[in-house]
Every structure is written in structure tokens, then in C-alpha cells.
Amino acid sequence: MVVEGKKLGGREAKGPFLSSHAWGWITHGMFLLLLLPMPLCFCSLWTHLRACCCCPSGPLRLSPGQVERHAKGIVQQMRRTLRQGYHAYVPKGALLKTDMLASSPQLVTAVFRETEAAAERADRANDDAGFFSRPRLNYPVASGIPAFISRRQFDVQYNIFHHDAVETLNRHTLGTSLEGHSLETVIRRTSFDATQAAAHTAAAEHFNYCFFYKSLRPWGTAVPKQLREAFQLQYGRDGSVDVVEEVKRLLTVVVLSHQERCGWVYLVWTGKQFDVVEFPHGACPIGSDLIPLLAINVHEGAYSLDYGLSGLEQYAQNYFRACNWFLAERYYLQATGRGSSCDA
Image (tube, rainbow, N blue to C red; front, side, top):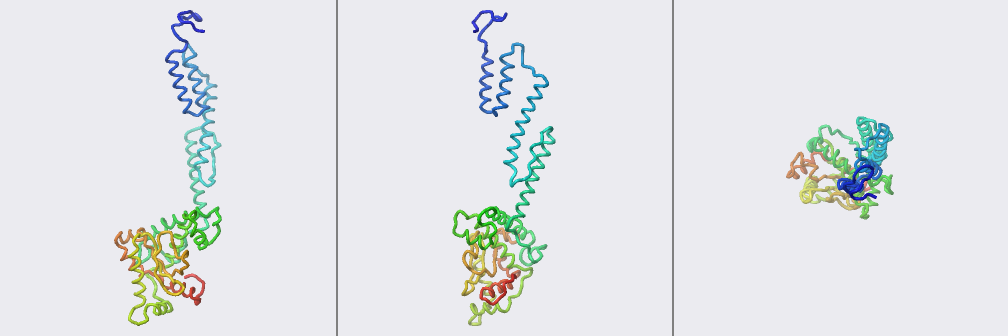
């Protein structure tokens, strides 16, 4: 026991054994104990208390061996933390190399950069392994689609919006019951399932973009004979109307009346007649059992770079200068049982 004013160990006790300064360090240490990781905090706190409170001759001095052992303990703690952090950070099974002792900041940086690069390679490999991908076009686009859109405008659609749709589609189908099925099957299976809305939207957009590309040809094509005759039967019975111009007019009217500026307009075959139908973003003819013949992209991102936000009408008019009417005829003949199944 310590008694006030008595000699203790050759020294006169002027007050309590633990001074107010020491109690302040203890309180501070207990607060740190709640914040820091337990192993490192307890070791540091115990060392600090011994140095400040229990050694009248001054701070505790550690030998070089003790310093080395203490440093190794901190490194091991850091290694465990880094390993856990890497596992949380690196996606899709990228190669991990966290068993190397962090002997220098340069080595730590090199390991991190290598792991980061491995993660990026794993992402690209997973995307390449996806069941769905953007189509290889059967016409050159080095200069865009002449008479319709520039290369820059085409790249926005193909390399940004369509790329995102395909990534989303693969992400929501790989490893699920939808994996391995055709695009049409995925669209039909997810049409009325609210839990599969993301997959359905991405699948429908993938179909729309692919069909839009097929609907185009640099400088367009002439209207084939059989398709013109079919238009004549529906739109030109009195012989006073240019049936091709009438179809163009109907398509343009629907394009300009699409208020959302975020969707698609199709020329379709209903099984009985031609029709022009608009679809919002995330919908397509497959879910409606319509036979698509031609598609026009009316998203603002499809024309705004070349025509401006107010240039939709000019965009629609120029579409017919790059329109692939042979595609429309081929699908019409297939739907009516008079054509082959090969693609246009």
C-alpha cells in the first residue's frame, strides 16, 4: 500500500502512486483500445503504459531484437489485412499474389499494380467468354454509314450503348437458368417476370441494336420488286399513291411522334398486313409476336451528335437514304412462306 507522506523505497511519496498525468494516459489508451485492431492496439498500449507509468527512470527502451520482432508482428498484421482487402477488391477470380512479404514500398506497389492488371484481364476474359456479343458487321463503317450518320455517331451506338447492353445481358444470364439459350428465348422467358427485368431490358436492346444494323446499308438499296408489290396491295389500291413514299411517310410520322426520344420504331408484318409500331426502351417486336422488317433507332444518342437534339426529322429522312429494303423483303417473304431462311 502507498501511504501519504511516508518513505517508500528510499523516496518520499508526495501523492498517489499514479499521477493525474498517468491516469490521463490510461484513459487515452482505453479509448484507443476501442478504435484500433485488438492485437496491435493491446501490444502498443501495454508498451506505452509500461514506459510512462511504471518506469521511474524514463521511457522503456527496446533492444534491436525486440524492435525486429515487434516490426514483424506489424507486418504480419498488415499482410492479413492486405490479403483480405485484395480478395474483396479483385473480381472474378483474378490471380492473387499476396503471400509475398512486403519488404519495401516499391514491392508493395508492384504487387498491387500486378494484381490490378490481373483483375482487368480477368474482366476482359469474362466478357469475351460471354454467350452474347455485338455482331460483326457485313459492311464497312470506317466512314460511318454514308448519307446517314458519321463514324463518331455510329461509334456512340456500337461501342458505348450497345456494348453496355451486351455486358448487362451477359452479367444477368451467365450462371443462371438463362445461360446457353438463344436471344429470342431469353426475351420470351423474361417478358412477364419482374425479377428478370434487367435481363429482359438488356436482351431486348441487344436485339434492337442488331436489327438496326441489319436495316442499314451504305447509300441504301432500291426497293425490291416483290416488296413493292406487297406495299401496292395494301397502300395503293387506287393507283394514285406512291406506295414506297407512303411507307416512308408513315415511318417518319411515328418517329416524330415518339415523345420520349428513347426507343425504337419498326416496320413490321403482323401476319396479315404491314404496320408501323413504336417500342419504348427495353421492348422489342419479339415479345409482341410481330415480324420485324426494318428498325429505326430514335434514342437521342443515335442522332444528336450529327443532327443536334432538334434534328430528328432530318435524321429520319436520311435514314431512307441508307435503308436496306432487301432485308425487309427477305423477312416478309419468310413470314409468308415464300422465302429462304438465310439472313440478309
